Amino acid sequence: MVVEIIISFFIVLSGIFGLVGSFGLIKLDDTMQRLHAPTKATTLGVGGALIASMLYFLLVKGSFSFHELLITLFLFLTAPITANFIAKAYLAHNATRNDLPETGRDYGWALYDDPPLLNETTDPRGE
Amino acid sequence: MIRRLIPHPLLSLTLGIVWLALVNKVTVGNVVLATFLGLAVPMITAPYWPDRPRIQKPFAVVEYFLVVLWDIVVANIEVAAIILFRRKADLKSQWIVIPLELTSAEAITVLAGTITMTPGTVSATLSADAGSILVHCLHTETPDEVRDTIKSRYERRLKEIFV
Figure 1: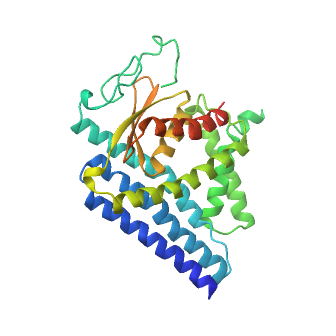
Figure 2 (figure 1 turned 90 degrees about the vertical axis):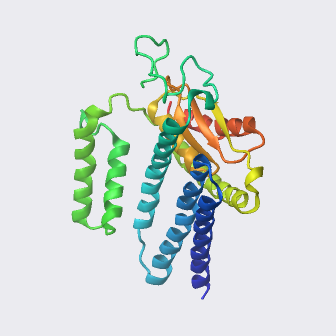
């Protein structure tokens, strides 16, 4: 009984955060703002469902499942890269140099400027 | 000799554990296969990792992971509250420029990923010389504070990990 309540709690939690993330997609209308909604759904939304699944297999089925940990690992590896690609594609298409703040460096943002040649830099950064 | 056999011990360990987790069953055969993969893949791909950073403090990695996990939970609730209760017109989304002290490509990648995974901030692009990172913040009144938090919470720890 207690176990079922705990598991249900995590499932409901993940549902709520998934819903709020989707609601954010509807409510916000700037692409960069909308990008924040899915990064949330994939963290606590999916996280809650994974914790519930792990608890279910551990406490009800009596076997430990590693797959949820792997899903977490792969999500943490892929989600930021997807978001970064969307952000870069959006900037390349819709923003100009003047829309973005200064870099505070000698070079502009990588979207508009080429990286320095290796022999030009006094501080090689391996890029 | 040992460095040629195991050029990347952490990668070997990760590959082995991931393989065992994928098959979800620890048997002798699976352990042998995991060991083989853990040894073979880093050996074959070693030429593609010319200047891989050495990770100095394994415990710092664990600490970093826990800090980020906690921040993800807190920030999730904050962003959910922003989406639900704040009027669209009141949202102050803005760009934040964070000067970087990290130099290795791996460390910057981890930092950019962390910024994106903690809700409320998304890293967008780097400056051409990788000296600063452009971050989009969903809502903040004090951009300087966000910048200082990211620098002191994440970058400082990463600097200790990737020496």
